[in-house]
Length: 315
Ligand code: CP
Ligand code: NVA
Image (cartoon, rainbow, N blue to C red; front, side):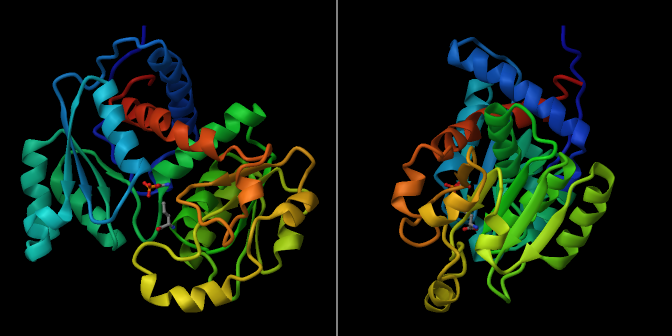
């Protein structure tokens, strides 16, 4: 029988979790995935109402978290910021205090990372970062679970990220370091991941035995890697830089040639949405080494695992 403790825990960055927390979440995710697939009734969020406050579009994060709340017998309300007074200048902290009085938890997707930090500071209920300009922690929790399903163990694997040192790359750096995975980043000059996050990830890696290398040559970075991972060249909010980015990122593509230099049993991941012919080729994303669709499906089960963890299940 699992002991249930109210944690009221927020996840704004990967560093809000410990490696032990991740193990609990993976265990919950695995168990709940099996139960949901059998259509079992799960009451973890019974009587709770969660809000999904989104400033940007989303297919996976929104639908997976909304479905996860419903699967756990809670209620979920979608709150696009365009329909709220936020869009007319109401301060985030005022919005946070009001929503916190109505809701049991908030999943937020924002442009400026400070928005999700302020939400968490003023809401008084758990806040989950569903992507900011600085990080995408829940994506990485789900992705590490997907890798665990495929590889059986994470410690000692090498993940190579090809492309933009963006929000996804930042959270991957922290997440891989926490579980003892090595990470190579190959990005064009000027598109390196956030240096404060790299320093934090190095500090974590020193404890778990992981190695982090930031470089500019995709072939060197991919050599022998167990996982090749990429993300879009133009993130949400960067549309004005599109032409420059399409030029600067040429060559930073996961294609059959790059896959050849990786380990023979390497897997390919992409957080999606994907742009075939840009950061990844069609043959690779549709090919036998791609685990992208399993990765996408697991966003639901990871969300369920994360919500259960926040409720204290499994502690
Ligand atoms: N990977 C991801 O976060 O996808 P969405 O933008 O569709 O939520
Ligand atoms: N880096 C991308 C991730 C999308 C899930 C973006 O921020 O648009």
